[in-house]
Amino acid sequence: METDFFRVEEVIPGTRAYELYLEFRYEIFCTELHRIAPSSFPQSSTGQPMETDQYDQYSRHFMSYHKATGKPAASVRIIFPNQIGLNVTSRYVIDRPLPYPDAREDNIGEISRMAISPQFRRRKEDNGKPFQGDPEPEMSRLPDNHRRHQPELVLGMYREIYLLCKQNGIEYCMAAMENRFSRLLKTLGFPWAAIGPVNPNVDPPRRVYLIGAGEIELSLSQRETCILGFLQEQEAQGIAVRIQKNPQET
Image 1 (cartoon, rainbow, N blue to C red):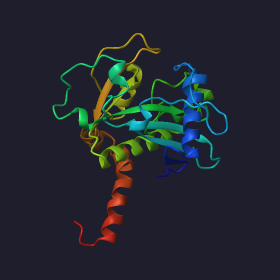
Image 2 (image 1 turned 120 degrees about the vertical axis):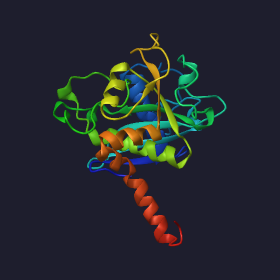
Image 3 (image 1 turned 90 degrees about the vertical axis):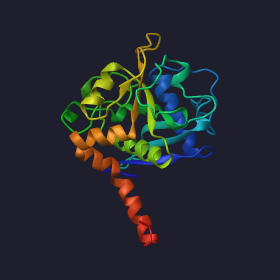
């Protein structure tokens, strides 16, 4: 999947692309942000440390690349429902019952390990564009004039998440976020709902939020139809291709 400036690809375990993705995670979460202790991690085939955990085997993984230079720009994984649970369930208090009665263990995934390279974080002149700001609180707080994040980079990653979940019966996603970032997303039409208290033992303090595909579609259809169209563009193209291959499909 591509946008004007970025290319998003799924990376498959066992490939060199997957190693590069884990190396990218190590650089962001261990070396730069110091959110994960850089100890006891495996090395890639080229001897570079890789950040990985027990949830990777239950996840689908994606990397975004800058088309002009080929540089890695962002990473994200979607943890699918599994027997050991989601990453947030062991680290945060989650209030029950959830605000959506049809949200169940088997249809909730988690948006995790989303990170943007320092080279592509937002810049001051991005203000006022349809989507801006870092995708998770795991981003460093560099001054605006040192950020070169394109709004479409984050939106391209969210489109990949949206389509993957729709195609695999994942109707809701959880994510741990700072309050300030959740407020930003809400102003843009992404109705994340807080489902637990702030955990002060993580830095910066975060809480778990929940969002559903149906809630996204309803909110964006009322407020940001251009963003909804962008999210659903690839889905519409896929449907058109299937109809061409099978004219009897309705």
